[in-house]
Image (cartoon, rainbow, N blue to C red; front, side):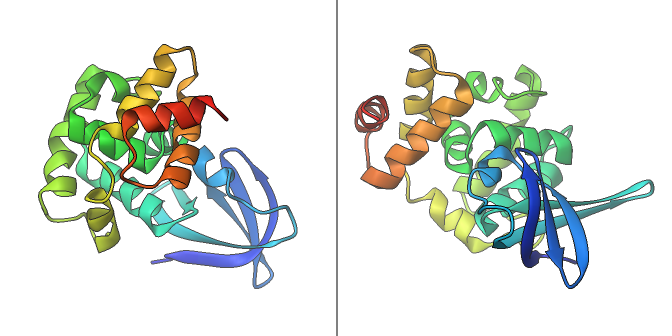
Length: 203
């Protein structure tokens, strides 16, 4: 199993990256949240990967962190009705921290804002992942323990509440998520909803 790739970034789009490694060019599907962190073309890059093999295709998915990669695997392997393409779309709209906060809070409305996710699928995400993420259930495959421990660090609903507040104020969901992530980096995991919103609005 290919779990990572290190090479030169040949080119990228918001949903794909081509990495040259050992004289070969590998095309990876990536979420927008990973594309935001890519270096300039021609620079060295390392991406955590997950390969999906099917009868008619072989697809390599790339992520900026193992944390993001492991959550992608959880979505695909634990939630019925969610394949790799929908999982990438979900991670392109919301960061893992926002998604986990929404799952913890049972915020079906927030999850339903992701493309390809209706109310029933959002409810399945909450039901099928809440115990795994927050009650020490068995992780899918070899997902890292960091995904479990990190889930205890941030306040359960502060992130998703802050994102929801910005959306209510007129922000598009991806922009709201990005603003809250920046605020979280600045203020730390113990920041309240009010502090996150205030910091996001002051940017």
